[in-house]
Image (cartoon, rainbow, N blue to C red; front, side, top):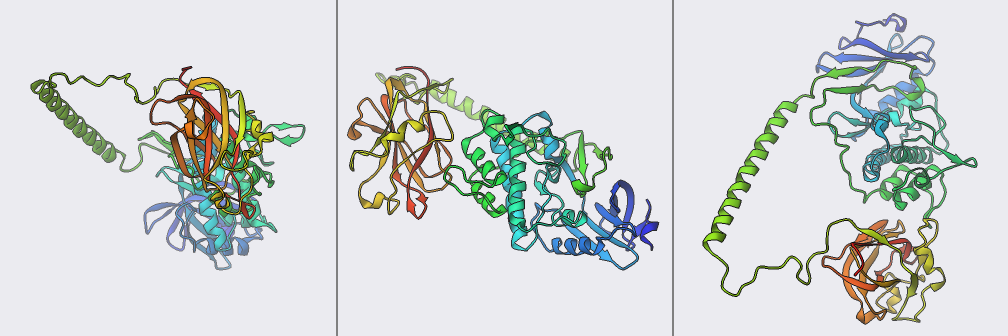
Length: 495
């Protein structure tokens, strides 16, 4: 069969029935087709006689077919018999990142979780010697089955003859752009992708935190280390998907929460952005996804069962309490008794009056000249400890810290601390009305910390002094050093 004779209704290898031409450009045509043996939809690329990259595309597709990561588009078949050449891949249903951003930027954790999944998948691909090189928001999809899918690995680059001398760096930069887009709903790349261009200040790309309030400093730094390929927060550029995956490893992976039974699911074809024809049709499947009715019925049954059990237990408890009144002299616990958990109502940020590098167990000074940089609200400034020969302060003392003088006694709801990106910090939160270490009470702690950490007391506590106390330091340039970029103290009100 001649490549020029391919049209709707054509069968390839007596198996793949070409049904709808999705788009055509550059001598390559993308079809929605059916695998008649396995009765499933597939995407098929065919090529005109003038297309000169058939060998490269088929070779790339065959290499990609050996990868097993489910977050990468599966390649089912790739053939070139001289007369007919084609590549058969998975037909992916779902919403691209462009679709997800139609209502505005994603929540930071959700954005980071999506990109972390993509980074892990691409890290596996790079281990096998394969790169993407053309990452755009259209190539990152949240599927109808509730998973992340990266479209076009190796095949997109082959279709457009895209190469790179530094493929790992190029894909790291691409992942950084995806994270930037997810956090800001703007695109920092040069190509058109369906999102507005990222803003610039005097020709320089604005950071995510400059574009959108509420972006955590840690994610802002990770994004800049990838997109700009420059160090941030004393951390080097992120030069590979594996490094980005590691940087995002501790981010929760919340689902983007599509509707349980959506009326329609967009179908995303396996086509490179470089070959997309403007105005090409988008196919949809009307009706809920398979199995949705069964799942919904099961959920309803489960919820009803839980409610019945809860009502029964509640009735039994009330009856038991009525039958067995409290013993004489035994008072019911007061909700305002000493030691009650702090209020969960609205909190307010309280600015510290002063900050001190706190080293009462050593020479009593720990970079006091930069302590104020941790409370100035600027992500570009920091306070840090001295550098030590071990995580335990060279066995010279039990800890050092940053002491905040709030100027008055306040109730402490929580303290948010922004650390460097390196794991390994162990922290304690101490509060009291004296700046003597022995008089400060430990009210919260966190081990193996990095990034943004929230220290929340489990009981109501108040005091004038708030101490972030390092009991173990993370690695830093061959030694060990603690770093604090910002501290925010929240209070439910003055004491």
